[in-house]
Amino acid sequence: MTSAQAPIQFDRASGAFQGVNPWERLAAFALMAGCRLSAPFSHRGYIMCANLLRTAVPSRDIVVKLNPDALFAFPFSDGYWSKLLDPAFSYEDELELLFRHSVDVDYTLLDCGANYGYWSVLVSSAPFGAHKAIAIEPSAQNFAKLSNNARINGGRFEPIKCAIGAVRGTANLSGTKHEAFSIAGAADAAGEQVPVLALDDLLDDGRVSANGKYLIKLDVEGVEIEAIKGGTRLLQADSVIMCEEHGNDPAHTVSRFILEHTPLKLFVRDPASNRFETVADLSILDRIKVSTNVGYNVFGTASAFWLDRINSLNASASRRTQ
Image 1 (cartoon, rainbow, N blue to C red):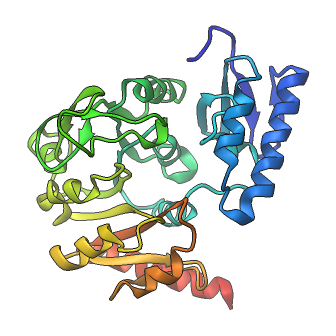
Image 2: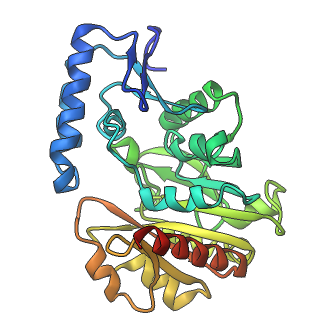
């Protein structure tokens, strides 16, 4: 928690605040307005403005009720997460589509680069199927907030403090933004020393089993390829990796590696069709990745089970547009 003061409460469904003073309420409405106004521009500039506003309000947390069974806490006016104060804002809706379509599947979420645990909170909630989730986050600063979010949701998901890489070891974590800490870069870079696990180490350590089903979110800030290399066995199981493709990478480096060096079939959600389209070549990403300041998720799987689920999801999308 950022302060001993009780956190503000906000319900996304009703728009109701509790425990908020007039100045904080005004600041919250400013954040909502900023989110709406910046949405057509991929929220460019929003984080900077929100963080400036944060210097003018008392330091305390806000707990957002994402759904009737999901609470998510973060520092009030945090530039990255305060967009959640706008009920119209949808965070990584391509991931939410797959999660909602998989409510009936007995899977485990491996939330790599969990930050404060947004997806672990949601996926482990009843409306999303109350799935098991393992939230993996290397930063001590972020891990404290991640652990708090596990606590306020009844301890229903497991936080692990480590980074994900190609092999087990240690690395230096650096960065100035909590949403962009990374172990990428020079080995002697200044920063927090953190343990590193490979995805396959989760099998060897008995945290997951080879016969399970997994949705694996890889938001690991520049080491996605190393993480994929370290998960060869896990990715041969019934699993889907969901990797961030950075909008400022015209070479589509992560997707290129998946296509050229793994047996995984690659998909991306096309906003034009609302379908998960096969990435047979990288030209489709040239069209979809239109903003350089945001990330786009691609999905890779070698699992017949998950391929069938993606086809089913596409069929339901087609019915919705008829």
